[in-house]
Image (cartoon, rainbow, N blue to C red; front, side, top):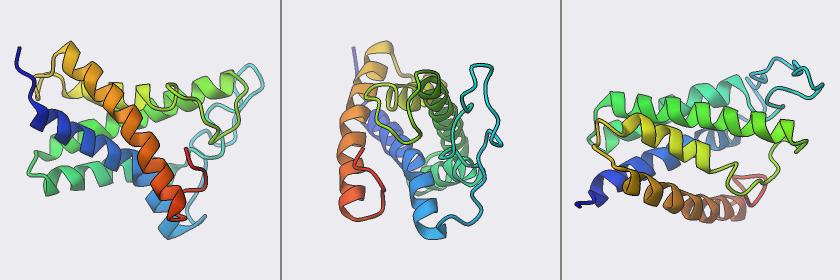
Length: 164
């Protein structure tokens, strides 16, 4: 079995770029243009659908950053778009699950925060980058470690509000 570390590395870098897009957007724009994706609506359990931290500007920034990142890395724009869509969907799923569990927006949930945000884009890239199951598992595990390290770095640099 051949594992293409270059393709896995490119996918991971694009996922990290997409994952950091809302954080960087908020850092540079502040609270301007922030309106929650769920429009302040609650699910039938009485809790917010996604919470205050999932904003339209944050969601829009994800595919913009990932597509630009793909271009910088010499990849097709479609690769960046797929990563962006996967990260957006994973991020919304994570937030939805956390709200159902009664967790506050931006609270840490190891695994819930990282797995969907890395797994969904990797599944979308599976055919175009010819990933097998082992490569996807290795990439998800690598993303968990990298995301925790990058989050702490961004917190230390006062770009991120929490260290996770």
